[in-house]
Length: 286
Image 1 (cartoon, rainbow, N blue to C red):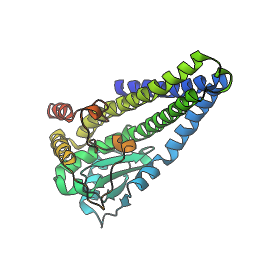
Image 2: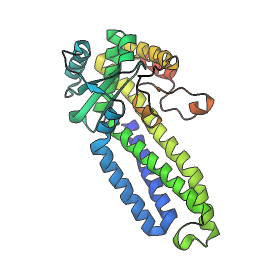
Image 3: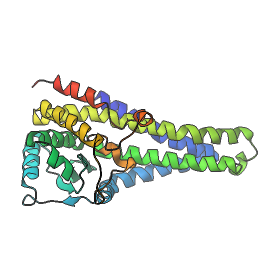
Image 4: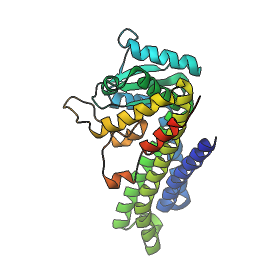
């Protein structure tokens, strides 16, 4: 409940930031346009985000005959959780990872890469998919899609503000040096703020999904072991020419961050530190 309240506040803040940019552009009229833009984008994210992500990663839906172990795991988990069975997909990539998508439990999908299926044991995969089903149960898949969409639009509009400031602003604010300064400040601050809010939402939902997933499969140690292997596997992963590559815009969807980065990227983490996640899981008892 605490995490959901925090998430709601952060999403509201992200929407407010979009409205604020609209106001900076064109006063009350711009603010209304910004709010309308947020509503339209949220609607689009609700209905189409899952299809976009699955197509982006060329995910292939597999039948029980094609992936018997994967379906056997999912069948067992949905029985324990009481959730409807999601569609099951495989992504042809040596990158060891997995994600879930869908607007609600009745329209959900879980996807695993060929890399994760080769790396983890049966029980570790069970822990990973339990984590992904927890995201579905808590509707994190929808929340993350909305947050990513709003953050992307805030960044886009902030870039527009930057160009507006360079060429003198818009409308009645053109002759107002304060307005131009405001546009410049918005262009710098807004995308950073939007990114930080999106990442805060992502990190808070990961901790909740770890706990819920461990509760579903009753094997927190299996999920902990999987996270350790996945952290190492992704950091040492060398993609082949045919591999599907992770995109920065959707990195938050995976169970561990699929992107490599140095000190700067670590400041903008899409996931909590793996060591902390593992520590919490190993402390759980059922």
